[in-house]
Structures are given as C-alpha cells and as structure tokens.
Image 1 (cartoon, rainbow, N blue to C red):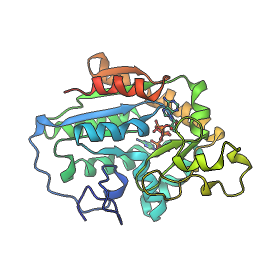
Image 2 (image 1 turned 90 degrees about the horizontal axis):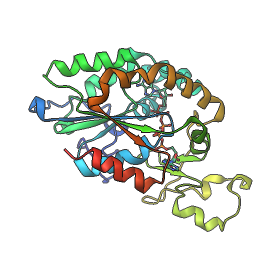
Image 3 (image 1 turned 180 degrees about the vertical axis):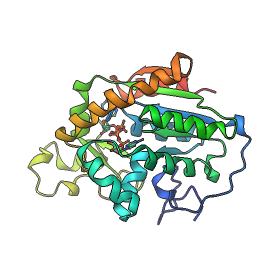
Length: 264
Ligand code: AP5
C-alpha cells in the first residue's frame, strides 16, 4: 500500500491516520523547500473542514494528531491505551506521546514537499520540541493559520458534527449536511431511533459517526485546555508567521481567506 492510499480503498488519503503505522520511509527532501503549515484554532473552528482543501491545493498531507490518536485508541495500541481517558474527558494527552508520533511521521515520503499540522503543537512545550526537531534539518515552521471563532459558537458546531471515520470528512446536521439526510424530508434527526441510517458519507455511502468527545461537557474542558495551554503557541511563533482568519463566517468566505494565506 502506497503512503497516500487509505487501507481498503483506492482513494487517495492525505490524512494522517491511514498511514501512521507504516514503516518510516527514507524521505529525501531538500530541507528548506518544505511548506510547513500549522492549522490552528479551537475545537470546532474548522481545521478538519478546510484542511482537505489545502491538501488538494498544495499536494501535501494533513497530519492530524487527533486522528492519529483516535486510530491508536481504535487499534488498542499502548499509545491508544494511554491517550483514551484524557481524550474522552477533553484533556490533552502528554507532550511526549504526540511529539513522538509527529517526529516520526514528518520523515515519511509523502511529507517531501511539506505538511499541514492539524491540532499540533498544542502546548508551548510541543512547539519547542517541534522547532528543535525541524532545526535538525535546517527547517522551521513556514506559516501558522489561526482560525478564530468565539467559544459561544462552538457548542452547536461540535454537538452537530458527524465524521466519516476513514477519510476524516467532516459534516454537520445543520451547516454541512450529507446528501443522505435529505431523504429524511426535514424531519428531526434526534427523534430517529437509528440516526446512522440517515447519515452517510457523500463519496462512499458509508455510515458516519459521532466522536465520543463531541459532547457539551467535554467541550468545556477542551476549550479550557485550548485557552490555557494552546493559545500561548501563537505568541511563540509571532506576528510574522501567524495569519489570523475570522472563521465565524460562511465556509466559502473562510476558504477564500485560507486560499490567499496559502499562496506560496
Ligand atoms: P482533535 O481531533 O485535534 O480535535 P480538536 O482540536 O478539538 O478539533 P476538532 O477536530 O474538534 O475541530 P475542527 O477545527 O477540526 O472542526 P471541524 O472542521 O470538524 O483533538 C481531539 C483530542 O485529541 C484533544 O482533545 C486531545 O485530547 C487529543 N489531542 C490531539 N492533538 C493533541 C496534541 N497535539 N496534544 C495533546 N493532545 C492532543 O468543524 C466542526 C463542525 O463545525 C463540523 O461539523 C463542521 O461541518 C462545522 N463547521 C466548520 N466550519 C463551519 C462554519 N464556518 N460554519 C458552520 N459550521 C461549520
């Protein structure tokens, strides 16, 4: 299986979770030429929504630590066992775990032109460890794209989200419904016994799922962690590298801004 193919599919998959356990490829890149992007923002800001469009535009993979950790939990690995409780409660997993995963992943072949970090770094310590890792090859983060959304908007986004597990495609019951939901004819999904019957991925027709941490309760902890531990990362990279984008708008307007910010 090539590094860009997801398991059991011939569909190109540039997301991280499909290939984090492949053997490390001997990536030969000319160090300073890689585009190294950080997609930054609170839970529900739209990182997973817009990252696939950057993937298509720049042909570099999206490396989501959240997806990688969920894959590890599903596979029951040691990393997964250590991460599960923290993730379910909305807390961060340890810096050592995520830095270890990312340090290996960015050496793989499909990162030869660069990569998009989604959900990483999430603490100042992680930023410093990333910088150190990149410095070994004379590299540094190229740009930080901050999707800014007020906390009050995020509960509705998170609680209405449905995802396609293998591709990571993100849907929303109200803001971005899958085509299959139209068959319910406007009736209330919450009153349906089997919601998954109406929530299918547009591309594959496979059932969508809801994440175990996508609850109003866990969101309180996730936002707390974001403000206390993750926001300082912005200051670390400074105004020269960070582009702030108002992500409390319609998706097309947000993408237009991201598109502009990713013209290299
Ligand atoms: P992770 O998977 O990274 O989750 P997150 O950062 O909380 O981000 P989300 O995936 O929830 O949000 P998103 O911005 O991708 O939103 P989306 O585009 O889907 O992390 C999960 C957990 O893993 C963490 O809590 C932690 O425990 C652990 N973890 C991960 N990385 C770690 C690290 N580095 N260190 C330590 N621990 C780590 O959008 C959300 C919804 O809104 C969708 O339904 C979408 O359709 C909708 N939507 C998007 N944009 C709009 C819009 N403009 N208008 C209306 N609706 C919209």
